[in-house]
Length: 258
Image 1: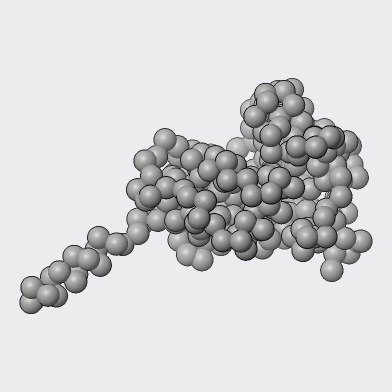
Image 2 (image 1 turned 90 degrees about the horizontal axis):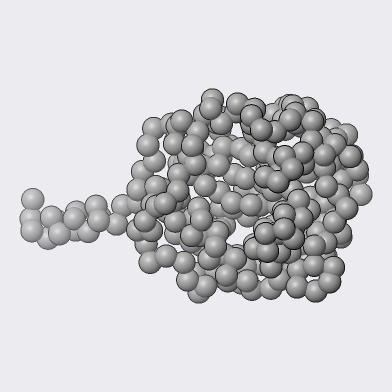
């Protein structure tokens, strides 16, 4: 092998992205928007991302794209990773990515909120980058595209289980409906305060391209010990979806969605 070939090969190897361990997955977390903002009124952190003008806690009654994290095959989310890339920079996000994020994440209606994208990147994005090599732009595109591809609110509404119109949620029934639609079982969580309200629904994605939905580790599918099966659903702080964001929320259109 020539010296030139060796140099080229070394360059290729040095730029290869990380490969996930066998059985590891990505976790797509959908957060019920009103409960996110309700929690913000207590701890003072998420409140900043729920609207700067009164009524600051109003949000429309849908799920939002909370985050994508990395999980080992045991079902535990991976944290405390060292970012192998240059990290997050606001210039990484194009106008199109920002527009999608503003519609699908809990920073809705704030504008170009770089601090929130930085928070998400530091919290879970860096670990995804370290494990499978997704830079910020691809990570955030995956978050918004997965949210749109697997539309939990439209599925629930089509099944006659519209979260915006009920007072409480039977978690088993909700997961059954979503499993029938997507082909895979998800999990749920309740709020960390009273532990009586529906908070998130979560599904697993393959850690390999094209990052489609897959089976979750068995441990992740175990019912949360501190959350009852029947949970209250917070709809009091819901509002309307803007014209700009309605393409991401077909469930907010007249039934059936179109």
